[in-house]
Length: 440
Image (tube, rainbow, N blue to C red):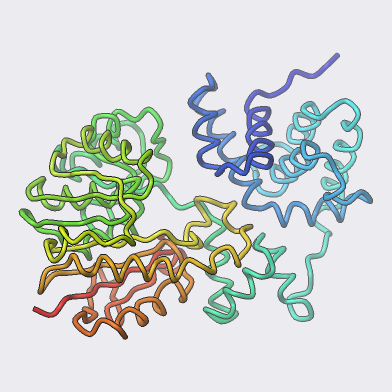
């Protein structure tokens, strides 16, 4: 008799195959599939765990599979590869799933011709998986880091070059843990205390941030279908992004330019901080994304945001020196959000080589929109110095009218007006913020 396929695992396999073939971001493919599915909440949670976990741990899982089989992973059919990864991930990382269930339900999804092979590899892991040796930390340190933390060797080398060996391992380890959901309370509609109370009544664990009162961490919160989010009482925003908004420091009545605004969380946070009084010009290169800001603003009860398609590198003389504050949250390599977008770890580092010049061009153009005495904030969601501190240094070398200004929030302090947030030290995304003030 054919074993009935588990629908959660079947959907996870479909998503993994789709992201492999289409190159779609995991979070987008997952969100789209879950919205169309009729799975229960626990099953949706399992799909999410499997998709993110397999994507994140691919290098480690492939190393284990190669150690267990005479057929190398790269020679296998894509579906079989993903099935082995799914099965090994459950056996290695999901303690609550019995080994026999992980094996049998994974095998049931395999093409008939491959079932015996998948079954043999997974059962071999149950027999001797714990005895498989990883590369030696002393004699082969790059390969050790790569297999242990599931990061490509070039990225491991780069992180060691930035942070040093010991700290780099701490950062790598932190990137292997999904951060808890962080909400930004919309104080136009609710207080942090009200929101925390509502979520607690629904059974969620809620922790108030000791950095910002408007930030609530809810580790097991499920954003999809949440009435609090649908009614605009809050929205999902990482603490690092919320800190960036606070550093910008917009006040009621200000004129603010958000030069690269989509999908809009910093725009929304800025408008809320301004008590929905003043004006925000929210620009983005991609016209198709601007509707995200418009619909989000309507849901949150914000009406001071004006959206427009614009290349932030192209100068508009009408905007010259009109803004009290300008935010340049520039396009970046994204190597600070590996925990949320695990597929980024597999990007070729050379793909980001052109970004610093693009980022600098945005900064050099948008600085002309800042009033005398105004504030310019430059931010990225990466931890690479060439996109961060080095770019700010390049900018300041040719713009003596701007000076870095130090800031601190909840014990987190900048140095020379610049701050790099990391998941191991701050429990946030990897994120960079620089605050620059124009001489009056």
